[in-house]
Image (cartoon, rainbow, N blue to C red; front, top):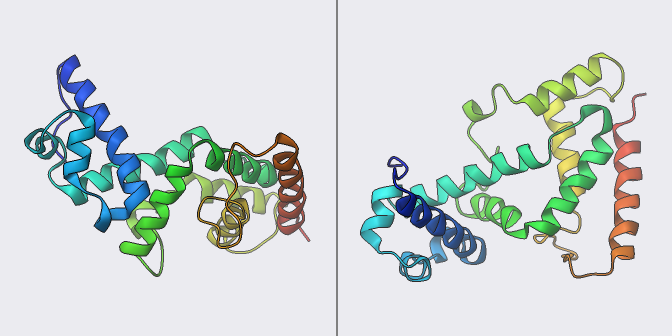
Length: 195
């Protein structure tokens, strides 16, 4: 990816491209996204987009890895309360359904099996370290920290925009979300309890 723009005007264009491309990739996937739609909606041109991002694949990468970072920063793990973490993930999927759709497109179009991101991207994962520390202290059940994290994330996605059963939206009544949160919290709490 090229360097980020140095001027305020360039930075605004860069941000518009990212915002529009996020919606485009979330809606259409990598193969279905069209650079023409992105530059038109962002009020720029292909030359500018390619100067910032290189190509369509690199633009998707920039958006995808930024979305993963956002989830980590906005919904930091608390290994001593994985049930609450699952509920906060549920809420983030309601706020930003595009983020979970991006991960799903990456799974479908790039990595249909195995880890979603390369091994070297996960080597020093603070989430896995936090779970391992909670396991060592006897606060979380034993097992592979990655598998435990994957299970909690999967439970948090039960009603996500990519659910095979039911996709929740933020527009549903709050009591429906409260009921789901309570079920999710109790289910995760029981699943990760030591012993």
